[in-house]
Length: 293
Image 1 (cartoon, rainbow, N blue to C red):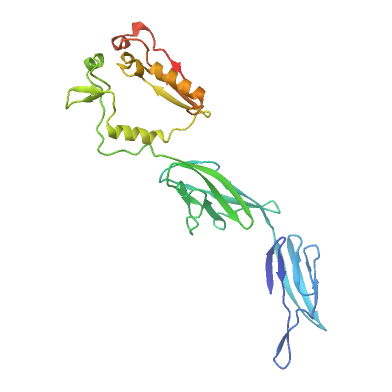
Image 2: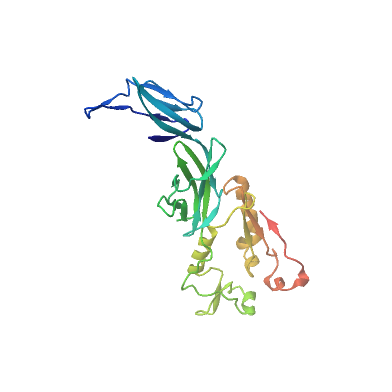
């Protein structure tokens, strides 16, 4: 008989006597117990062996002049778990393989991905598999951040997983936006988006493009903790005081200072404020003024 335990764990042994008449009797609490290597394990009077160090020992039970023995092997204990990769970013519907590596009391390491249990703190952001053949594979569900946790016994490890919108996805049925003929930029009745049905232009984007823009905005990542908005001013924006890009920048700065908007939000304007649209086309008037909020 043999038994294997992890370092720090116990193993209960039993002693059974076989008699000449074919009968048997349990001798566990009657027999005398001994261990051949007390530096590896000890054994109590009731046959309970306690591991002390990695290695192999022989456990013996004796009753009268009869004895029996078994081999006890003590294996290294798991002392920590590491998860990789750390803090990855994933697109919606894409997958990411995570790996769990265990470090043992003897300094050795082992891939325990298939032995460990996996979970995601926010299943609406990502889910992770515990199924055979796909252990540790996370799948992006929605935009956001979740914590991926792997555990084995009392030990665990975790990391964050960020899921971004798939900006490469195409939207069907959305018409292409093309520049209007040059002349329409110089009149008040025209704008950035051309409406061929009326012959007029508009500064209001088509609904489908507006929705797509808002969807893409959800995937914007802060740069050094800040989110930056870039305005490439409309050709007639400076002709409407309340719509001037510079005014918008200044208003944003005031709101940020007042705490109305996130203090990490900045706006950069590339429009040339207080300049008629007809002059924007002419480089002789100099570079556009850059303002930031």
